[in-house]
Length: 354
Ligand SMILES: [Zn+2]
Image (cartoon, rainbow, N blue to C red; front, side):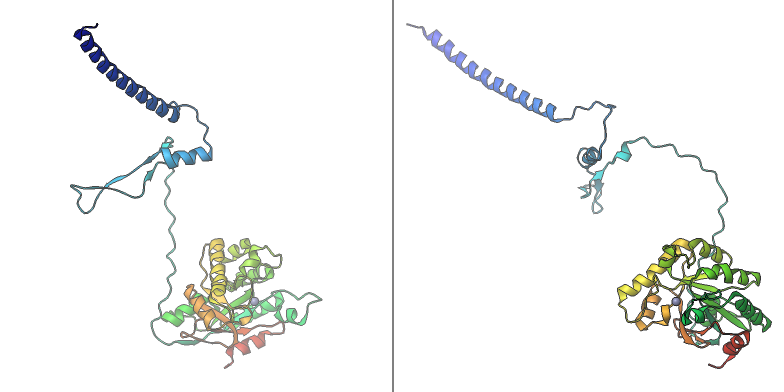
């Protein structure tokens, strides 16, 4: 028979055994948790060479290096702090050493020309009898040319005779900008002014017309079809040619993107033609065009509305005449010059009461 002391001792040992068991289980569990945590953390020593693939960079930027930004609330900056909804993602570039900036030689900045501001009409309904001549090809038509090509072609010698006759009659070549500033603001013009324009942007405008104008200190406006220049069509101006002409004081303006009709079209199509050609010209030449020549003379009120909304200042038509009006800057009249137009004809046309 066992003594009461024995029973008491055994009871105490059982209690201690349970405690030891519980503590052991807890320690083993904690160890397991720590072990799992260690295995899941990437074991990359600082400075270790890590091959970065787009996936690892994206993963690290997206998950590992996200630090929420704490920003004080504007409502009560003293007491509350709000967590912004956008996490501050630290990108790979942020973790790379900042490159030392290369010293840049300081140079006196070139004076920038004042931006050309759209002239605000002063409200006076001015009209002016200013002829705008319309040329196309500036070359002798090829032997197999059809009647249309021949009609549109003015040989260089005839063009030179036109220019000399204009000068002899006291005419000064002005730009469409000069004309518009007169119509809208009353800016003074020479007594006898004439605008010379070329449609389509043929290459012979550069090889033949451009030197003849330059020799005489005269200027002209060239309406180019921007897709044709982009496509480097051999019969049309190149962008280098257009830049050289612009630098010499000529104007390069829009004749649409692809010479399709701008009449009866919807807004999207007209925006594509008007704004598309404008942006190409601005990109290639660094100057924003302000005038458009409607291909084949086709336009309607919707055309005018879209062109005006694209911040063009005016448009030239194929309507025969010399009467220009401040109230209709998008319907400027022109005088067609043909293969058969003699210098006498030219003066007669531009001084006629159309
Ligand atoms: Zn044309």
